[in-house]
Length: 241
Image (cartoon, rainbow, N blue to C red; front, side, top):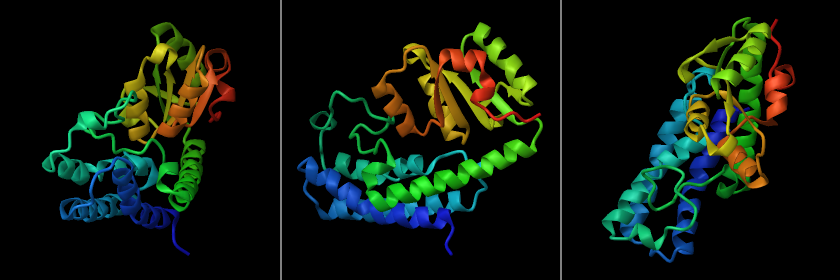
């Protein structure tokens, strides 16, 4: 039976040309030889990136499959630039997910890639969550990074240490992340934590439905209210001791 990593790679690579073609058709961009070659190149890049991810243990992974899919769209962006397509003709009120992606090619979630790719992504995510959960439960000092005000960090940090976590300052050293997103703050930290493979918890006083949907699309693990994060961390994270 194939692994979820292999299944994910095959599903994402299969979805890649269809996704790009649909984006181009929707935007009225002609499928020229230049664009067709870019799609083939991008699919090969994606296959290579996901093969590398597949061969990396969950705990050592620093990018998500969706981030790699977005990265593999660079050849298509270059082809659009070469073809003289103006980014301004594509821009909408929604900002690009990635700074270089001026053509806004990047999917917000794997749901945009079709049912097969989305379900493979979900199965992969479940397997990763289980694997990281097992690592955390076996380690009395699983690392946690906390990004918020100094006062809240002290409060959360005391609870985390009591629960068996080691509080670290670098996201690259962390297995879990707890991040305050009130007022849109620390958005970059959320992206960095997810990219580093952290199981990421975000909290805030007033997280609206649209923001919740965007955070989940990014790959956030849990979204909780401020009192829950500040006053009852044990309800959010596993207790290790």
